[in-house]
Image 1 (cartoon, rainbow, N blue to C red):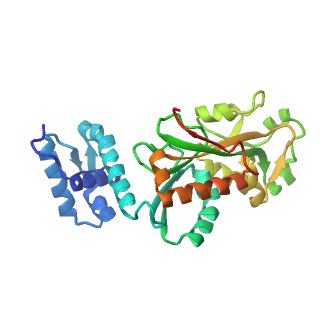
Image 2 (cartoon, helix red, strand yellow; image 1 turned 45 degrees about the vertical axis):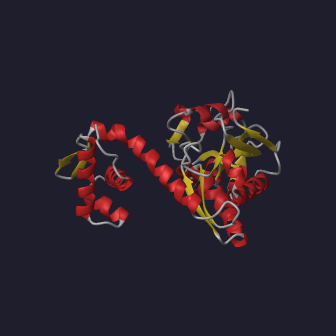
Image 3 (cartoon, one colour; image 1 turned 135 degrees about the horizontal axis):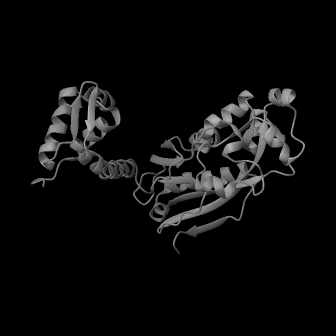
Length: 307
């Protein structure tokens, strides 16, 4: 057991080595020297009393102890980043850093125009945008604001249901010119369908009942939503896409009267962030912009999770 509490910079170097797989890679990522990174790892190992890496010819392999330590070190990193964001501006100022997390499609295809508009109005606020389909922990302050497709069930979170984005089945005009458009739902199995590789719970909840749209029907399977959308745009086949994005990309909708699902969109923040003008400004802007993107206000529901 450690006799003294290791300094944060030792854990930061440890995480960098975990992510990069080598001292040299970690040094580059942190803009430090390789000997300094190596010294930090040795000091942390000595402080904790356990080896953290096994040295092999092609780099460093984390030990079981390192893998057990990783989530705790990542929580420390999130807390440190949150402290820096809070310190970047006072609660009353429209200055500082706001971190947003959103799914890959929303973060890459939907939010950038909205953030560009916000930037012109509030040049003093710096945006950090994390695009991931993993649900980041707002209670742990991994981010200040989240755009999610499900209502959060954690206490102390404020959530606003801003819209339900319609999703339809689309193909590129070039693909449909050759393959033709399906005339009935049953016809889609004769087409090159684009879909998921692993059916996650949210996909199962959205999948239309009675529609032959499951893994065994797909000609292209991917769990990367951006890759699926790119395949539709390239003319590989037909697949589901957000209606506003499909219109922007010039895709053609098939079976519009038979196939439509709706993706609920929630904007979420920790209830303590209500007191921060800069976070609230971003929250309100995203709520209004996403509502317009999804076709207007949904139920405008504002709630505190767990209440």
